[in-house]
Image (cartoon, rainbow, N blue to C red; front, side):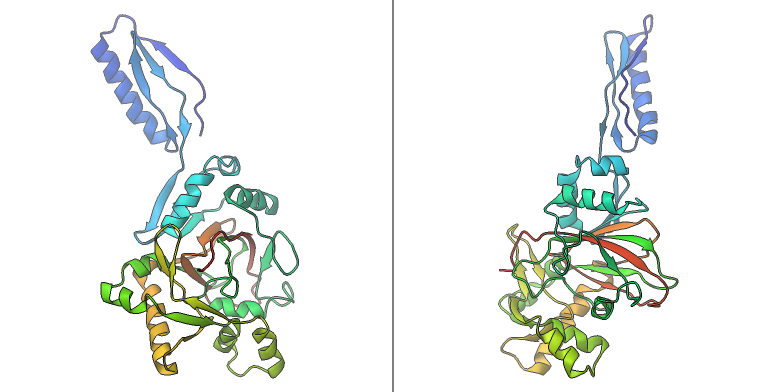
Length: 327
């Protein structure tokens, strides 16, 4: 709520002490109503003055290690005035939730553009992607999206992964259907010094086809070849970011740690996944119609949680173009 008017009230005949007391009281009262504004009463030459307020980013943490809710209006968010703060908060907190902001597709695209370089879908160039496991709604992508039910980072086959995804809820699931997130910055930072040293130089082969075996352990040869055609990539286990911070590169595309046995590799990858997705570093978002959630793809993993594919659950996604290579 903006307070753009300038209020001036004469307090002639009152002593300065009484006026200052009144100004202090008004400050306390107004703060209860204008929680997104800076509202300051001052005493000047016998009058109480109300200065023009400045709208602030209204936020609250979800958990100590991950997630923040933001409560500003559509108009305030679409203005771009908070873009810098939102970007900083996204890196710090991993996941930002805008409860029931109810953006239209046009508004979601516009909001995405305030935060960085808009990234259209590579497959068809569309600005909005419908995310659904319903084959009727998503005939081309429903099968591939089954891999999204397992922890992952988007773009492990790319040199530069996307910076962030923005997902809005159009139709929630009839049951289940939460989206889980975990903070891979916080998970790395909480490792012991010995474990950090142990993992520092390890490298991992990431293969999108490895995720196929999570939901279809006996795929047909044609499906396997189609997934393998996406390619493989060797990445560091620990991502050293330009900011100086470090995060873990994990997920269902992680096939094998280079230079160790399959058994030892599985223990490392499963152990770190279990660590990174622990309660302290994770958050499960229960969707309501109109919610928008942004997550930092460079410092989190995410997954959809189980739901009925035929229930009509529908999400609309936009993305921010990547700005930093894995190495």
